[in-house]
Every structure is written in structure tokens, then in C-alpha cells.
Image 1: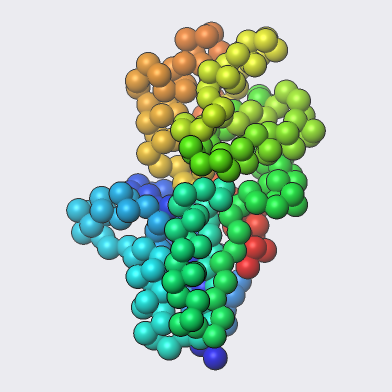
Image 2: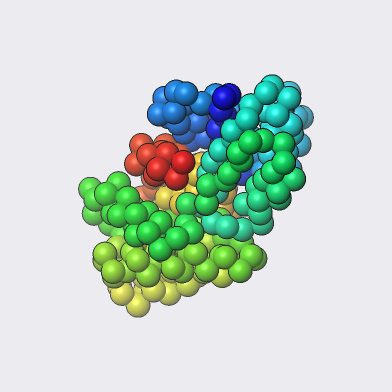
Length: 250
């Protein structure tokens, strides 16, 4: 029986982020599951359109499944590299429903933050990878208007159990903002932090919203409050620990 793993992420237009986070994770999975053929797709239509303008065509989930079907695969595992069960993840579920009768077996993994054990494991990974960072860590999540934006709050609660003063998560488009974090930092009289993306890739949000030149970038907002800032520019996909986490989802 021919078996395939379809690795699906939001995507990025940043070549370096694509190679360092997404492609590196795909290669990691390929090495771990040698009896599967590996395919890739992006869920973001905007990202895919921008890549076409750059001469690069990445399939969406349904197009990738059509190709996999036409090549005679009978078992497909869709690995979601999404962090929460938001609108982009729902596109994967729609694709599974659309193709459920075309394969002997088709399943999709849950996103990073889904079950209770996920939150505990991710919190422990964060503790491990930032163990040598002496300043508090302020992480930039994407956020969403979707109800599952609450995943960031749930993770924050797990991190608070590890340390009440070291880990802070805010989002670009969700309910917890950098202004909420600045308020916490001021209350705790914290005057130096390290900012880093809590996203699969270190792409547009990290380079512009987090460390950009605009007055409302995170780095400038923090500095305007007399908070010194160090920066770690690495997406989650660059860490072996998170690649292993996704492998365990399979």
C-alpha cells in the first residue's frame, strides 16, 4: 500500500524562513518516516498568490490531495503545522471531508495546541529551549478572531506554573496584545526582556511587527517604556524539539 504524509503549514514568503523552519521540519519528518512519501501544502491563499508572483507554486491542501490520489496512494496522513485550531486549520478538516472517500485511510493530526497534554508538552519545550536565557521571554503569537485564540491564554497558564515572571505571550491579531504585556512588565518592575516569535516561521510578523522600524513595533514600544530588549529571531520550526513534537503528532 502506497503511503503519504502531507505536511501542511500556513506558509511564508520569506525564503530563509521557508528553508529554516518549514523545509527543515519537512526534512526532519522525511527522515523519521522513511516508509512514507512526503508532500507539502500551504493553507494561506494570500501567501500562495505572492509566491506565484515570485515564480514559485505551492499547492493548497485539496490540490495536493488530488495529486496524491492520482498517483495511487491509499493511506494519507495530513500533518498540520498550525499552532491553534483556527480558520486555517479548518481548511484542512474541510479537505479531509472532501477526500474521505478517495483513500482507504485519510487522517489529519491536531494542531500544536489542542489537547491538555499538548499545552504541558509545549510549555516544557519552551522551558528547555530558553533555559539559558536569563531575561524574561516575550513571545509573539499570531492570534486570531477565532474562538480558539484562547489557546494562547491556556498556554500562558501552563507557563505561569513553571515561572510566574519569565514567560509572556502576546499576539498580533488576538485578544492578548503587547500592551497587556507591557502593563505586566511595568507592574513587576521588569526593565529588560528578550522578544522572540512564537510562530512556526520567523517571517513577516517577526521582521516587521516585532522588530520593525515603525513606532508601534514591539521592540520600539518596549523601548519607549524604558525596557531594554534582546532579540531571538528563530521560528519554532528551527528547533529540533518542536520538530520532534510534530513527529509525535503523527
